[in-house]
Image (cartoon, rainbow, N blue to C red; front, side, top):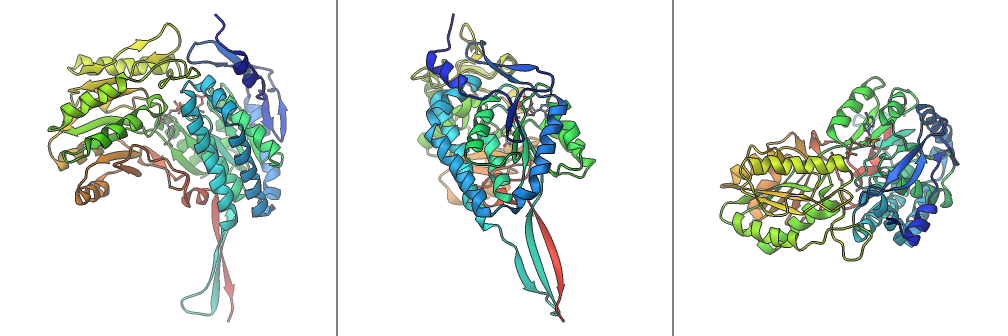
Length: 490
Ligand code: NAP
């Protein structure tokens, strides 16, 4: 059965599907193409050029060639191009959201929210481009002057995941463009279309050839490793799993490459006995169900004080049971499919493991749908502490609920993971809130809030969730070197 509508076909046809290298669209050197699938149906939507490692080197060469002129371009011009791209994205948000839903699955309103978030990074960094500054001072002992200047790090490689096909790119591209860096972007195999659409918007906005190059490929490692080992590359910024991140850090050691790593998470969601339960349940729905649970910031495990755990789990189950699952393009759908069969199977095996150890499903618990990779929104109660689902990243619409007895117990449970991206804390007691926030080993905390992502804030983790920050004032620093000049002035 044909499921792609005329409007969907028109949106797909408008996206360039070549490699974007040195300002030109071209086929890969091998002529190979890469299929892009609709995760709601398993149908092939279109195909894109599939870059070879040689294409990757061409892209690096283009970035290297463009670097000096781009670094010398006036900051205001760089900012104006970012601002133009921001405006163009917002003008086309309906088409871009549909495109994203087709390749990634989430419901169209969620795709719109991501595109707004993605575009906001371009707006924020268009404003930051003109505020990069150094300093000048007298040495403490006098007799010399100290000048510090900020300079672009140089050509960068960005590797991004499928879960936020555009925002994970613009969080890097925005500050890099603002700072005067050139770049090669390797989007995820499953979701290259949003990044290709973004490249064409940047070209229209006047970004010079070679500043941004985009190379979708089915051989991520073979394409990226030679670039990482090439001394012309000056920076790697990766968003993805901790497992792949570890490999890339190892490869980066050879050239002592500057690296930023936005890796996996295992976010605890703590509900204390004094919490406003209405707010906690709202926050839980947001922190769990955003992006079908396929977010590094997704609440992975709910640790709830034993006195309120039953009521919290029942109320959360009622909310999740009311969500409508379906193809993300359909009106009224809240929850789209997971990205692929492997992800759906992982979620299923984590649920089966928990249930096998004594957890009970208050709602959901199974895969669903005749086609595509759907999983029911699920709440698991009485999850034992040794269940795999409490230790592994779920990346799906499943909320395991477990209990704690004291603040110390809650903090110990929250920190009992190699990850440290984000934690959520719900309490009305200010002193408890501050004490717990200070003791959590995470880069971010949502305090009575189910969403932390904000372009004006430094996003990033500690421990195995990585290092480096994206967004905020910190985001552009990742793309700047500090040079110090000592000036004799006797
Ligand atoms: P992934 O498997 O690590 O893939 C991420 C990117 O790395 C993709 O573009 C992938 O290409 C590429 N890749 C895979 N193997 C590679 C290799 N050997 N060398 C170079 N590149 C390689 O992660 P994912 O499953 O797409 O994304 C989910 C993960 O990302 C989760 O762990 C999530 O927590 C994390 N994430 C973190 C953040 C954050 O800001 N901390 C944000 C979003 C997601 P292919 O697509 O071709 O495999």
